[in-house]
Image 1 (cartoon, rainbow, N blue to C red):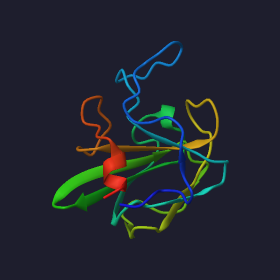
Image 2: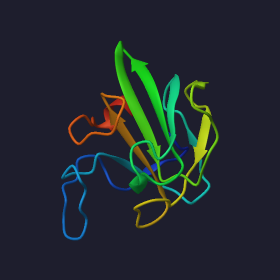
Image 3: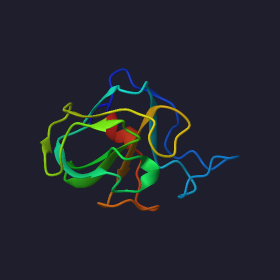
Length: 139
């Protein structure tokens, strides 16, 4: 898998526990946040099929999220690109790694502009099926 934005700098890492006023439903940060200005192009991290647009995993992720199913080394994963300002794909589209799929934003429950990337082992959002996307991005 590849990075979802060029020159992506990680803000909040996967697995950070709830602290202070920061409260995630799963008790920890379920994805990786990439700091970037609104309108930064967002790319598919691997080949796959777009399975959801809008807010299929909850309105806290904003109105312009993208969910893609990938098969990596024989295993299925669903990645969600959240808080986007606009999408650039459609449900059912087959995407290749590096294809433009959205533009970053500050939609939903955020403290500032960034791209939130989550990875799950099931096709829907769940508090127990998230996996750290960083090792997959570095594979």
